[in-house]
Length: 381
Image (cartoon, rainbow, N blue to C red; front, side, top):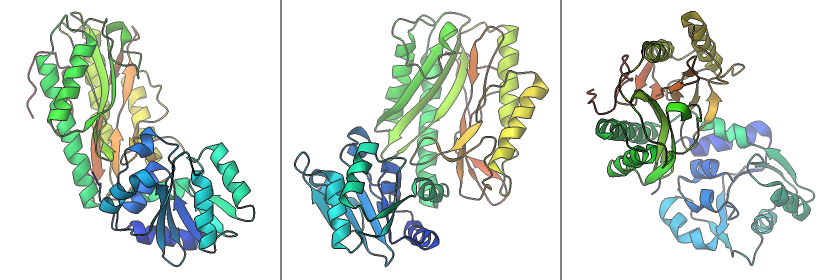
């Protein structure tokens, strides 16, 4: 499924070529390739050795160098009509890319490339093929353009976020003490697909003594017990896009410590989200959130308190110390504070929002309830 071409993509790439004094930029990472072409090629992530190159020259000419197996898909999804191919196992992708650069008179040029993505071995082959070319890393610079989402892109992310949130609400209402983590996690996954996802992007799930395993899968041998805290971070795949959503529940009879830790975390998330507006720095959000943890006496350990979100799960800018990017309308962020209580039980909540001209707009159905929710109970928004 095509995710559509961001209307600013072409002009942004051209401006970057001029700014950096380049003769061309070749987008190679799945995210930057998708941004430049408007196309979604699933195998770009699942079979990364099938390198694809989306080339834009200083004159504005665009062409692709891709594996021949994907030409038909790309022809149906991108407005770029000049698609050149290589044959897997017969041709070396970067050497075919080098041939096409030479054919365009760029063999000795200054070329922008996603050097954070291209494997070292492939880059060595490329340098050998074009010894007089100069390669400049444009991974982050192209990625920075993706921070601003078009209205159509925001609509896709909002649909994914709301569908995932609804999937979680229904699954946790159906959850029961005694079920395994995997049964509950699988129910969330099935609901996401029923709500429009192509499949799952990731499913991180922990209950009881396993909540501190932040990115562990749901275990089929771990049964949810009365009094357990259940913490999860899940995402569905929606074409080139995904969702990213975290919540914390109780399996019943929460202790005073659990109630207090949870409600304080929700207060911190709420306060942090409420400062989001154009003009503040990304690091301002981090420092504010960190200070809220200190003010309320919760353990703070996070290297970031959220992240830009789009074609990539963690996009720039990150909401972290040292990130000086100014927030602007159209940027989309996940805000996700988390903490541990004195028993090393983990709590986590995460919501998606878009920065607007006057502040922000939530893209999930709403923030988590301030009182810790219990499985089997209905939450209404």
